Image 1 (tube, rainbow, N blue to C red):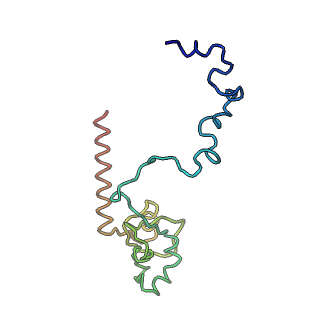
Image 2 (cartoon, rainbow, N blue to C red; image 1 turned 180 degrees about the vertical axis):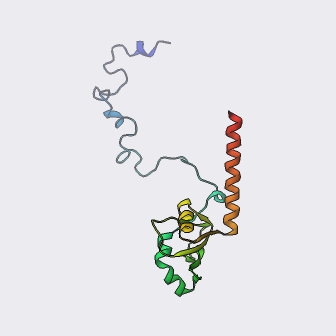
Image 3 (cartoon, rainbow, N blue to C red; image 1 turned 30 degrees about the horizontal axis):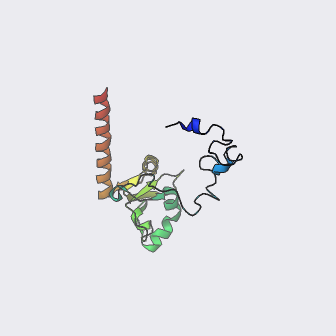
Length: 169
C-alpha cells in the first residue's frame, strides 16, 4: 500500500479542503477552549465532578459573638432575662444570645478592645484575647460541657501531632 504522503503528491491541498482551511486556526474555530461563550457547546457546562465535599459529620457551623457587643448590650440582655445581674457585674450565656433559628454547632466568644463591665460569660469556645480581657476586668470565661469536651479533643489532637513530629525526627 502506498503511503499517504505518496498518494497526495500532485494534490494542491493534501486533504485539507480548500486552500483557506490550513491557515491559522480559523477552520477549527479557534485554538483550545476558544469560543466557549458563543459557538462551541454554549448550552453545556464542562462535564465531570470537581473539588472535594467534606463529609457532613465533619462540618461544623460556628456562631461568633464579640465581647464588645456583649458589653454594649448587657443591660438590654438583663432586661430581656438573658443575663443576670451579679454583685459586681453580669452573668450571661452566649448561646442564649445567638439567634435560635440559626442551627449552630457551637458558639465562640471573640475578644474586643476593652470592657466596661465585669462579665461572667458561658460559651462553647473562647478566643485567647477574650479570656484575657474577661479575666483582666474581674470576669470569668466558663466553658460549657460540650466546650470542655471539644477542648479536650483538640488538646489530644495537638498532642498526637506533636508525637508524630517527634517520631519523624
